[in-house]
Length: 174
Image 1 (cartoon, one colour):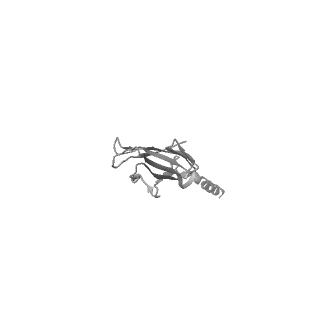
Image 2: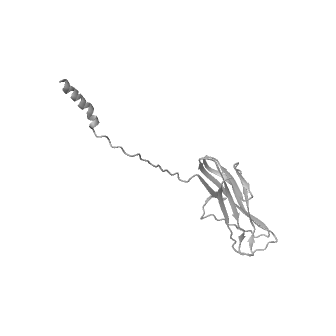
Image 3: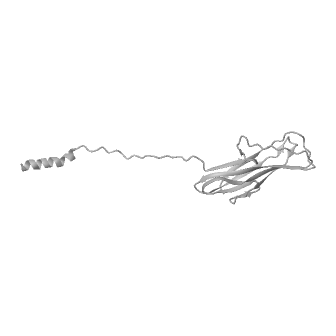
């Protein structure tokens, strides 16, 4: 009986050794990919009436007085919203053409930039240099651009529709 007990005990102890081992899988690498949609910085342009302008409707219309000498102007306002992980600097650079009917009839056109934002300064008379702080910023003023047209008494221009354009270029960096 002792021999039967020892054989049974050995059989029970050795049974797990004879069982089939679980299959082992090779190591696997899983790659994770995520995307944050670009909403870091948005710059908007508004006219004097407070209406936001888009690329399609960014048009300034001037009415010229019937006087010997005059100056007319219109303003555009620049504002931004951002959600930046770290502070960054940027420049809005403006290049303007004179309003012209043809090669002989050109109205001298100038821009004037002003800003009350402590993080914005005017550079070279045609650039807003702005520091955009980290964190959420909503509808923060950058500055005002005023387009001015002037006629002196000695200037003589033909009647007609005068057209011109100006470009805005944004660059990042200090």
